Length: 407
Image (cartoon, rainbow, N blue to C red; front, side, top):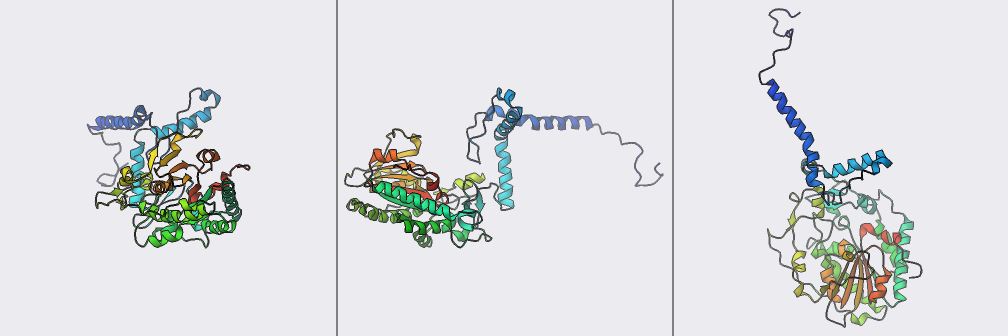
């Protein structure tokens, strides 16, 4: 029993509820119900969503109702994945999470993007381990894999040379190879990277190989060659690479008796840069979900080059390739100079900025976005040279996609 006059004593019964108590409870109950109901109701609007905003992948599809009778656990897991990709407010909630992690704590909210110094972003590869594998040495890249890649490239070169076709392998360094000083301070480089080991193995195997590390490292002291917010080099970096590739083409074509058809490397016209107008926010900024936070000047706007095709000889020819698995992965350019050589270029996305530069050196060139070498296209095109371009983090691809033994 509470003592009379004791200010700390508790009342014997709860105090009466204020008059507004029932109304407050009703308002809270309605707000809570809406918070639960709105995300599922928003599925009506998001059911046809074709891509996730930040992951840059198709959303999980809804499982068929008929599958519930076959396996209830598989159905519920599939439903959970689809609901997680489609529920209303997903993009806004993820954006808040990304802003807090990147803006407040300075850590990347996604596993395959690293935040470096001074607004530099680095792509860690599709599996998130390319920096560990190709720079730090934490993930293994065995010597037998290096030898397998070099031998496969030598096989490709020999198979092409037997057909009178020159071959050139080009590896575009990843951004962390050219700009290691922009990585976080704790990142340390391994003594020998897989690319350095592969370069020695290719030299030993006699593969025609263009090493772009030295010219890019030298040129970066004059101008920025890679985007800060993107996983690719910019047009300035591609121009440095193009000059090295064009110089090596002459030697490769000379080896098969066609060196006289190669023109001297052209110095492409640089598009004008307008301060404050030509800005860029790249794929890594979009993967973080913060394209407005991570922007940079676009010192060499590739869009202006692509938007002015009449300033170049090469024109894109939209001719479908018979038998091509996906016509969107094949581009053909022609230049009305019959004395120029013909080429097939197997490429990845790093070659996008190379296309308007390299196409000027060929009367006809077919670009194939593929990690495998398609000899059907080669037989059909009958090129003078085949160029194989690959980014550093995918140098294991030739061993994973060997050419047929009878090619």
